[in-house]
Image 1 (cartoon, rainbow, N blue to C red):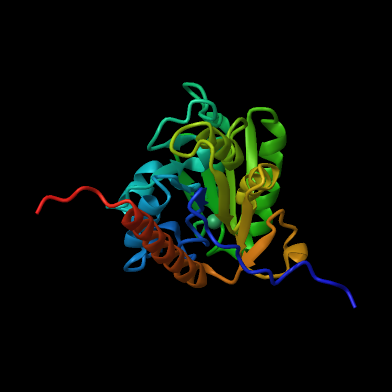
Image 2: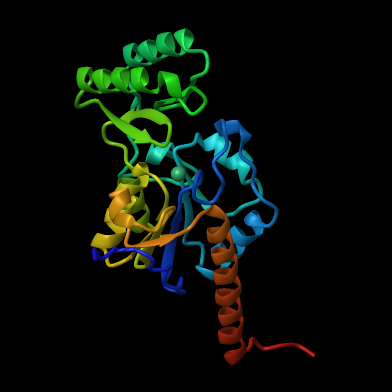
Amino acid sequence: MRRRRSARGPPALAAGMSLFLDVDGTLLDIAATPDAVAVPDGLVDTLNALHFALDGAVALVSGRRRADLVALFRGAGVAMVAEHGAAATIPLPSSRPGRGGRVPPPLVAALRRFAARHPDTLLELKRHGAALHVRRSPAAATAARRLAESLADAHRGRVRLLRGKAVFEFVPAEVSKGRAIEALLETPPFRGRTPYVIGDDVTDEDGFAVANRLGGISLRVGPSDIRMAKSAARYTIAGPGPLRTWLRNAADRLSSDKGAARGNFPARRAF
Ligand SMILES: [Mg+2]
């Protein structure tokens, strides 16, 4: 019988770790369009509890625009890395593209023409890149893939094509979530901590590789047969709902450990 490298639940999150979380399909359930997602009640509180428990070493690492992340997670104190590392709410000196680090205008123009011909597709224009969503237009997916591959070929060396779930996305060639995570790990409060990287899609694979290389933990949200998913992640969890519950439990446990540790060394109190 074939052995499956699967069904290993996530190892515990520990106080000396740093936590990197993808958003869509990881923290949030996927919706028909990027604007249709919902942030469940309590999730921002969970993120803030983790931020406190891990001394600030928590970052969202998403393909979304920075303004979208800030609006979706209003009130969350965690770092937010947008556009796969091309933009962030904190400085990322070694992974940010230089000034003008954007995908070439002729590539964007070709995507615009395609989206105009296929109204069920959605072209999401970002500050540094562009994403063609085909979730509502499976019939256009094959043509979109052909166009994306030909554009990637024509602009080789300047752009990377990221093939996500029902989306073809272009980012500047130097941008990846893995590089963004590496850059964060050079910077306080992330520096010196073991990375715990959680994601669900091909764009998270660079981050999983960084976690594996640095002795950290890579956790994929989705089906448990990792070999079938061709993922570098070493652990899986079934979906965003179970992940949110797991994060809440981790936050509660770490917060209570932290409280207990403080209890051993009580601050001087005035009576
Ligand atoms: Mg995702």
